[in-house]
Figure 1 (cartoon, rainbow over the protein chains, first blue to last red):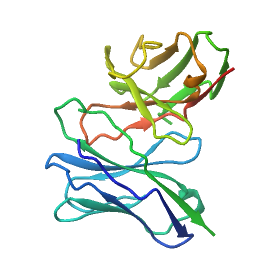
Figure 2 (figure 1 turned 180 degrees about the vertical axis):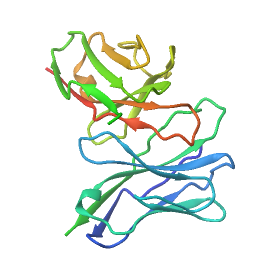
Figure 3 (figure 1 turned 60 degrees about the vertical axis):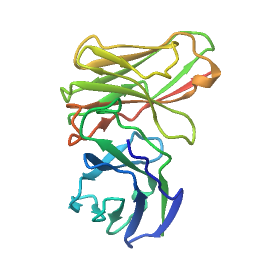
Amino acid sequence: DAKTTQPPSMDCAEGRAANLPCNHSTISGNEYVYWYRQIHSQGPQYIIHGLKNNETNEMASLIITEDRKSSTLILPHATLRDTAVYYCIALPEGGGTSYGKLTFGQGTILTVHP
Amino acid sequence: DAMVIQNPRYQVTQFGKPVTLSCSQTLNHNVMYWYQQKSSQAPKLLFHYYDKDFNNEADTPDNFQSRRPNTSFCFLDIRSPGLGDAAMYLCATSREYFVTIGYTFGSGTRLTVV
């Protein structure tokens, strides 16, 4: 599975957009990019995922570069409740020993401040 | 609401005394996972069930066992807890292994070993 690299921490002002980068330069053609977040003392929460097209849902937008080597999660109007650890994960569609298993890296600690 | 429920939220056990953590789901998902998350670390997959088929991670200690008596319930048994087993234990479900289906996590059980 492709390794992902994220900055260990980021800050964002409340009401501003939070742009969280993720590098996955070794991603293969059948690997999706997933984003989860974990608010303190809670279980991780699914945010969004994509293969090669940009995606948007009620929580966030996901921008994947054309070469698929990196992506950015965008929280358009960050609130204090968005303070959490954000995990970027590359997961293959099928096959291999990691089939269907979500494996977390260290993630990015996003702190939204007033 | 359909969800993944973990009980208890907090569990204190004595060193060496067997303990069982429980997870139930109302989502009717085929796959149930157990993760261990130590302080300031990312969640680490211990094992999972696809229906009744048990799949252990290679580096999961023998001290950890699991049972899934039916679709709705899954248990994590720690036969002889050590101080190093103090952690948050997270249960998660997914409808299938396929990447396009997101995982749903419970709120976790925080285990303290005294």
